Length: 116
Image (cartoon, rainbow, N blue to C red; front, side):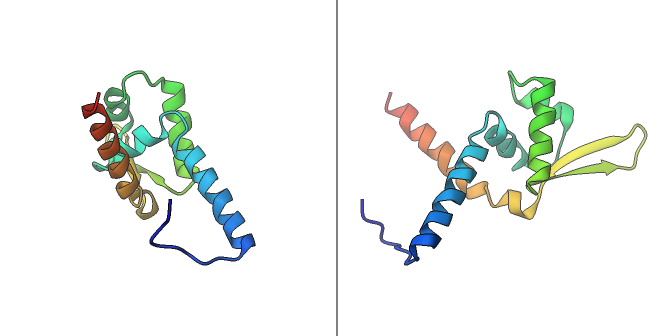
């Protein structure tokens, strides 16, 4: 397959890009990560809203994945001063850049489900 947008890189740059691409695909392909990002693209969500929106995810895994997204700089955890304490999760600017990726995946899934 020929790419119309060829990028000319050194062999070392190509290897680095390949490694970074692989790491990124592995990260967003990790169970529940993509679905969490998908729901946060709608805007900030509280923990229980995510639990409700994602059938089948366990409390432990949601907590773990949100922490991974925070550590990767894709999500921020905001504590809102209220009584009782309110915590929201929101995509960062970097996290919002996944919008086009998630949109492309959703489009691909819908198209391929129509063909079945």
